[in-house]
Image 1 (tube, rainbow, N blue to C red):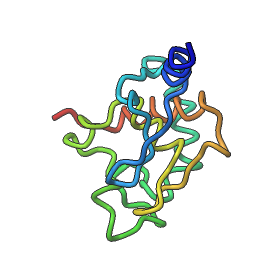
Image 2: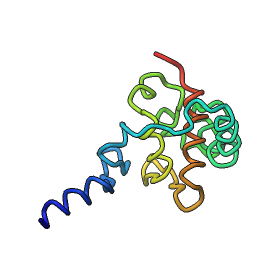
Image 3: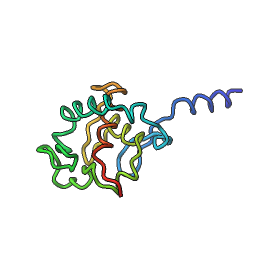
Image 4: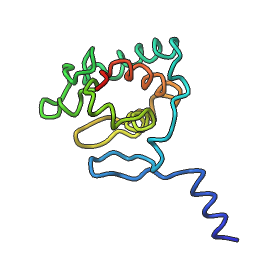
Length: 132
């Protein structure tokens, strides 16, 4: 009975695992869907939050060319790259914003923003992406 309870508990609250690139992502992050993905109001709200929290590093168009961008990591910071976009589903982008990483530096926003606010940023960021 204990093992059954443990299995249910683990399934309900997936623990983030660090991957080789320093991101802390739950195993099912790529399966999580953005609840606001097609909502124009969410995209507008996400753009406003992006301007306040992301633009200084990622730049106005998401190319990684903001004034606080790490010049050695600009390629990693480019949100418009179609190859990278294909590997970064909504849930992965959410957890990258939520948890951040140490190197190259990406601040975690889980203390500063709500989950809904992060999802709106994801909605906006996805509009910056070029299709491959």
